[in-house]
Length: 145
Image 1 (cartoon, rainbow, N blue to C red):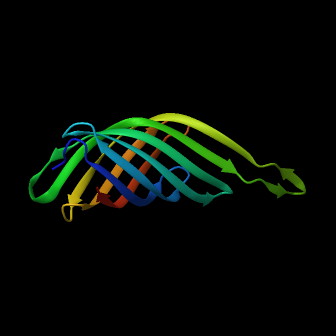
Image 2 (image 1 turned 90 degrees about the horizontal axis):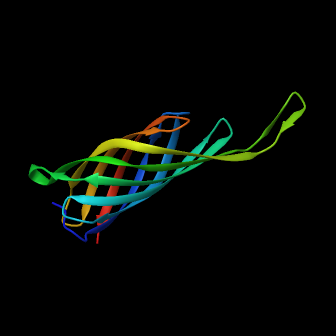
Image 3 (image 1 turned 45 degrees about the vertical axis):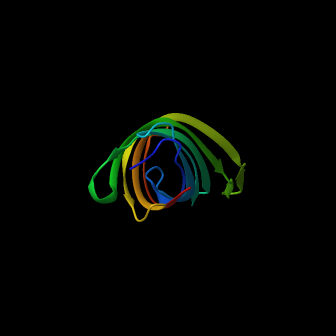
């Protein structure tokens, strides 16, 4: 069950499909109504192919409470995908570092399980439609306050 005005923070770890990177981050949640919440997050994507990422998303969830502490939610929102290429030297030619930002929108869903009145587990999956489409799955542990 979620209640209007409820706030929580969620620590997450997961995987992003393109280009196949592990990620860690945090998500905040605020329930606008009993079933609708806003959920901004920040995710750090570990380097792969000399590229490091920092994704910022703002999603809305519509929460459907189920039996025995479970809930499911579809999500939709916007994404800002920030990547930094660290540069390298190939055959004596130096390629400079550069950063780039890509905008997109998210569609997905998740499953939550309340461990107690103020802690929970979360599984979330989303597809980001952008110039570089990607699928993300994250597992998390959260605290309500």
